[in-house]
Length: 137
Image (cartoon, rainbow, N blue to C red; front, side):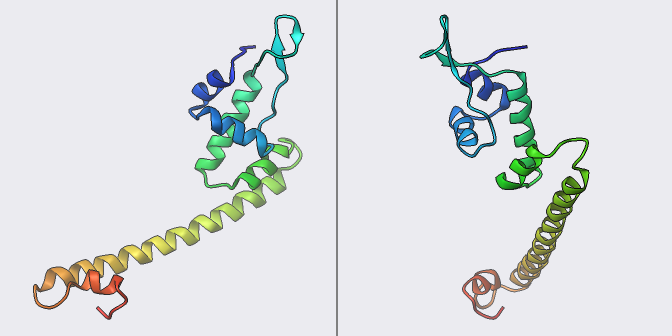
């Protein structure tokens, strides 16, 4: 097992040290005991491979758009027994992504329309600016 400091864990996980501490406060990562040469005590915390695996899981789930609360729940699920709940969380996330995509497509279509209107004439106010100011375009 590889052992690393919090800075080493942060570096390998692609995050800052404060992110590690934030995840610990939120209960997503455990906070290991401090170790010194004499055993547990006033030394530094040591993180293992499982901590790195968990950190990478958190980062991947965040990239997929899961909230920290959802990630905490996913981490608590047993990989072999809780497939139904994991699928349910994934379905909720997919539905949210579909809503976001629909909103973005609608925004893109509207902006394309405004850009076309802006390009069609030099007369009068710019339709893009007018639309953002709440005026009819």
